[in-house]
Figure 1: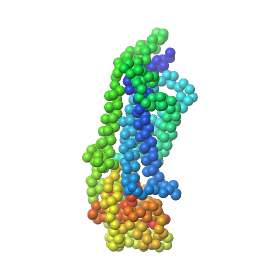
Figure 2 (figure 1 turned 90 degrees about the vertical axis):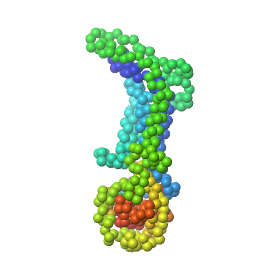
Figure 3 (figure 1 turned 180 degrees about the vertical axis):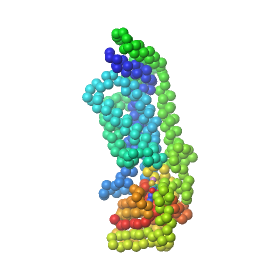
Figure 4 (figure 1 turned 180 degrees about the horizontal axis):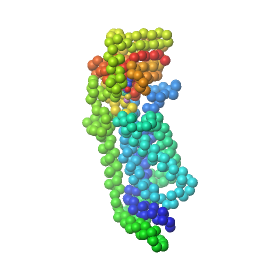
Length: 420
Ligand SMILES: Nc1nc2c(c(=O)[nH]1)N[C@H]1C(S)=C(S)[C@@H](COP(=O)(O)O)O[C@H]1N2
Ligand SMILES: [Mo]
């Protein structure tokens, strides 16, 4: 037996624990896999509603569709932290498998799992940082990276599941105990530790001293961390992480929202602000008494002062701001319907709208709205929020508010609306 083999073996032997077995890897893997699939699907929805492929049509009801979908995305993503570490714990000894590669299929399997683990860790870490708006720490565009990595993750996950399918099906249901290699051990009997290998016959000198050191790795006392303690740890960590964060997305947990960056009802007009007027450099233009909203359709152009917008039929709607970063809050909005404003310039019913902000040079300064949102009765050019004149930080003099759309598309400090 070679030196490396013996070293690896010693590592594995030192790492044996009751929860490090195939059954536990399957149990945790099921949860982690589900979380990844949920994140992938909700992520796709969030991506395409922001970057639609021409011809895509989106649901405008229920009004909380995006709010819940993105809340689930962020919450499931945060739960991946305890789950992924639990999963790595259960399979850790496999890292020291000998020989490292047994066949070409095994090589592919190990390569895909390496890719899977590393891209998953990067994905959830940058996702978490994003919920805290730490965009500045990335030397790469967050959205594209997060999107691209998700395909690498789902692809390598599929390869991993395909490769492990025999084991997954074998250990899907609870049987008894399982040893390190995944063999079934009848209930009641202790999980056997692989027998210590005899000290190989080696020469004198340096190598033999290393072998002697390796051999001092103590016999694992079992059990180290009991299966129950392991499961309790995952459940407790998962619940805690969930409870302390989910309040930003789910109202009933608001009281426990300790870590999440946004707090309900805190901010001007009792609503959090994502980007202030100061940060967007619109203080002057937005407070300009001569501000007008320019509305165009083809060659027709009309301008509306805030007073003129106020004299149009006003509607009141309850719609959430649901940020891509996971926080959301319901609010009460007042203003004319977007479709009524567009009708003033004779925009064709059933068309889309491009909304342009006073803000310059930001990716949020211009958004396009699909026809289903434009013609929706709940879509307003909002002038008031929670019974007050729209605060400057919430988009005074006028902002867009539409149902089931991500916060980034609810353009503040409107300057122009164009029929498209
Ligand atoms: N012009 C402009 N509109 C904008 C933004 C922005 O930075 N610039 N931020 C958007 C984002 S990311 C969100 S979540 C909402 C937040 O709205 P609020 O600040 O009124 O809560 O506004 C959206 N509208
Ligand atoms: Mo946002």
